[in-house]
Image (cartoon, rainbow, N blue to C red):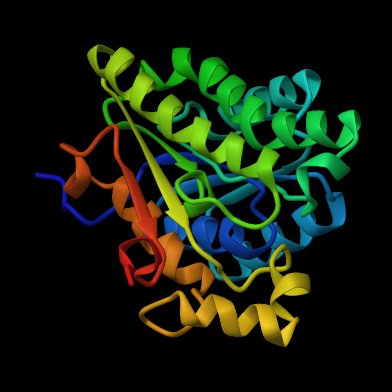
Length: 255
C-alpha cells in the first residue's frame, strides 16, 4: 500500500516556479519524492532554480516559457511530458497583478491580466487533460486568491480572474471526475513574495492587512506550499472541487 503522505514517483509540472509561492511548491513536491518540471519566463532564474534543486538531490527539470501564450504552453507541455515520461500533477501557479482603480486600466493591461491569471490556467488544464487522464493519481491545483471572494480597494481584473478560477475548479472537478482527475484550488491572503513586497512595504497598508488578519502576521510561501503538496497526495484522494483559503483567518473575520 502506498504511503498516504508521499509523492514518490509522481510527475509534476509547476508554473511560475522560480520565486515566492511557486518556488516553495516545487521544493515541497520534490522533497516528498516527486519529479518536478518548473516553468518561468526568465531563463537564468529557471537555470538557477534547477541547479539549486539538483544540489539538494531533487529530480527537477526546467524550461523558460511564457504560459500566457499559446506557443509557450505547447512548448512547456511537450518538454514536461518528454522529460518526465508523463504527467500526474499540474500546479497552475503563474499570476500577476497591476493595482489600479478600475477606470485607470488600459485595454492592454486588462487583457494582460486576464491572459496571465485566467486564460493561461484554463488552457494549461485543457492541454494537460490527455496526459492526466492516463495517470492513476492525477491532480490539478489552481492558485487562486481571497481577492476572488472579497472586494479590495484596487485590482478588479485580478480579482475577477481569481473568482473565475474558483468556478473553473468546480466545473473541471465534476467534468473530469470520471477521468480520475481531481481539481482543487488554494486561495492565499497576503504572502511574503516579490509580487507583494512593493505594497506591503507601505507601513499604513501593512497595518491594515494585519488588523484584518486574526493570526496577526503575513503568510510565508511555505504556508501555501504545504497545502498544495497535500492536495496532490494519496491522503487527499477524496478531495476535489474545493477552494481552500490560506489566509490567517481573514475570510472568517467579522466585526
